[in-house]
Image (cartoon, rainbow, N blue to C red):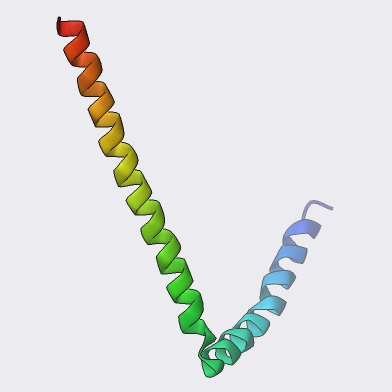
Amino acid sequence: MKLFPPLITLFFFLSVQPLLAQDTDFMRSLGKMYVVVAVIAAIFIGIVLFLIYLDRKLTKLENQIKDHDAV
């Protein structure tokens, strides 16, 4: 009984792999793969820029607290 879920998982991965490969080739043939990559890259760049903004803002606040405690 304990072997049953791993077998289902293995069967699932083996049956889904050909479907994913066909979908990838289909999207690539339509040129939509580049759109997906561009959207993912834009989201990643946005997150990185937001983290840089937060880091600068936190550094500024930390310096203000440090200066206030020093007085």
